Length: 131
Image 1 (cartoon, rainbow, N blue to C red):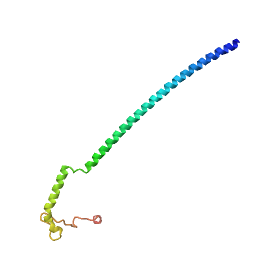
Image 2 (cartoon, one colour):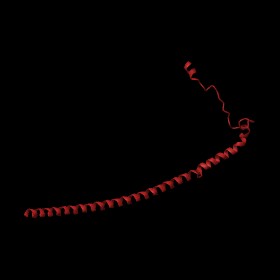
Image 3 (cartoon, rainbow, N blue to C red):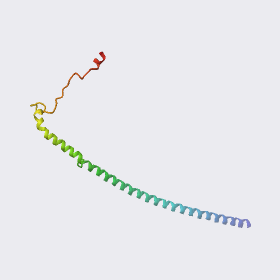
Image 4 (cartoon, helix red, strand yellow):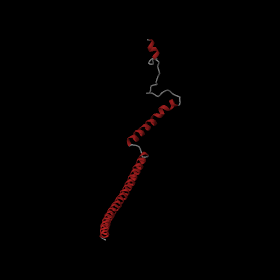
């Protein structure tokens, strides 16, 4: 009988150890699941924040692109516009002088020299080799 009693005591002690280990493991599992839940919540919040930030950046980029496209169709720089206006005024002013020449009815207007091509300034590389 004493051997049965000793075995009972041993089994009761072993049962206590197993229950203690089980309790410890359950506590570790609860801590792990709590940490995992916290981490998942943090990741969800980070993903939401990143999504909002990306959406804001995309809106900013689209707004900048729209401004750049609008600039393309705006009036040119005032200095460029002034030069263009002066250029066309100059053309309109000198057009009557050139009209007859352009129609082939007159010589080049006074003050403009006709370009002449001369063979004097043109030399051929073959002639240079013979010299």
